Length: 156
Image 1 (cartoon, rainbow, N blue to C red):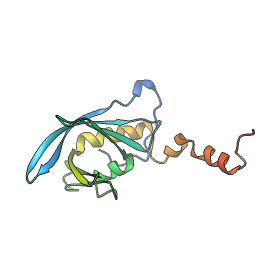
Image 2 (image 1 turned 90 degrees about the vertical axis):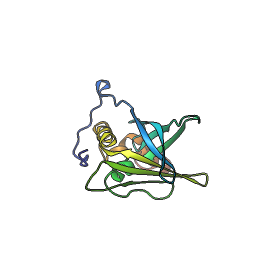
Image 3 (image 1 turned 120 degrees about the horizontal axis):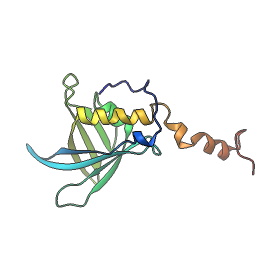
Image 4 (image 1 turned 30 degrees about the vertical axis):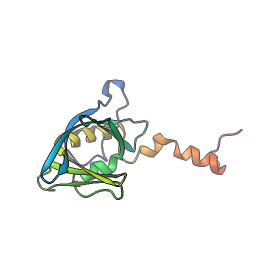
């Protein structure tokens, strides 16, 4: 994982489509007890701020969470996030493991993340949509201009 995704050039070709990342995450279930949870990470350039994670625990229905791409990326190196989703590096000098904590419905789920695989995949998302360019894909400027009747508002 390079950690420096700001200078990466965008690639918009179907040949460079970003495939989902399938991982088996460890989930803490109790004192020194772990459960393997298959998870699929997806990134859609049409929703450039988010990574969708589909957890598929054995014997339970799948659960999907949307996590901020930058929050997830930053958390692989340091502490990131507030509120319902937090990510932090286990050992910033080792960079092998990070943790994802999700608060929901009065409970907490904690997952062990493999930094090398997830970091490389996240770096590829920045090839598709470089950091700082996300808002240009959201149409925010046109929406606000139309909403407030600015000079760029389309004629009606």
